[in-house]
Image (tube, rainbow, N blue to C red; front, side, top):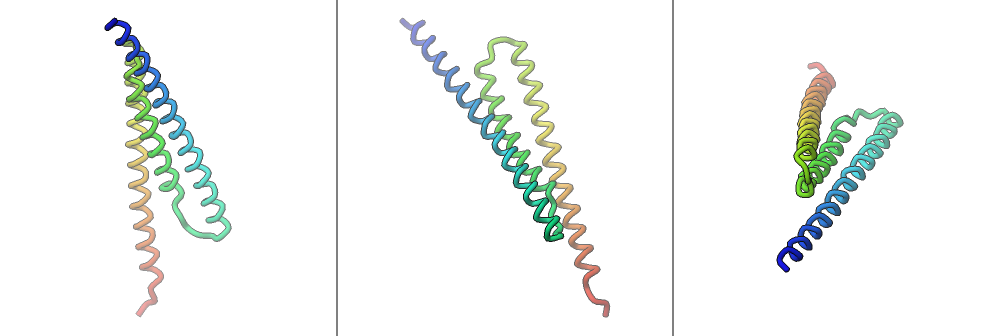
Length: 130
């Protein structure tokens, strides 16, 4: 009797975990697609209006958010891992995604600094001389 209940709970846990993993992966993919399309539209608008707007920051934020969802999926995936080899592969995937997230955040931070420096230099040279 108890064995049947435990088997049922285990089956339910695996089903819910798989559904959560697929849902989070799908959300991550949708964010990458939406963020990339948005950056592309911004690029066309910038070219048309000859404006200066940093696409790297916009796209980087979308990619970072997508990676967060995908890492969440990988963490939930640890629940349904059966073998030590699968866990090792999962650990490598999580580590690589974490490194990517850190690199993207670093790139966004540097782009913001560059934009601020450029804006400060631009506003300084636009002032009329006295």
